[in-house]
Image (cartoon, rainbow, N blue to C red; front, side, top):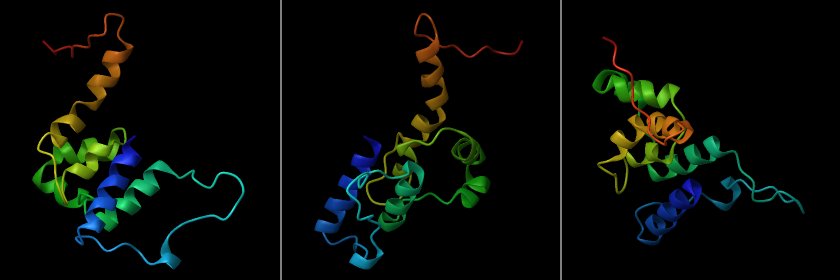
Length: 120
């Protein structure tokens, strides 16, 4: 689903003329009877993010928002990353990124709740 969302953003952004699509020679496609639609998630998301102009500058974030930069660098890859900047950013993207690990651990908890232990 994350790939579909960023592809839809690219499609509609190109329809409105805000984003120019790469030339046919630059588009990655393997002519093969098998596996023609498989992509590497991270690489593909970055490629489309660069075309859209929504890849966050982690180096800049290290100075302006080090907590978010650390989470982007060391945490799981999420589609929220591409909602921080660029066309149609989402105000809740930062919070969603920072809470990703909590949601993962909540899914593994027997009661479905995950509460961080506070150091006393």
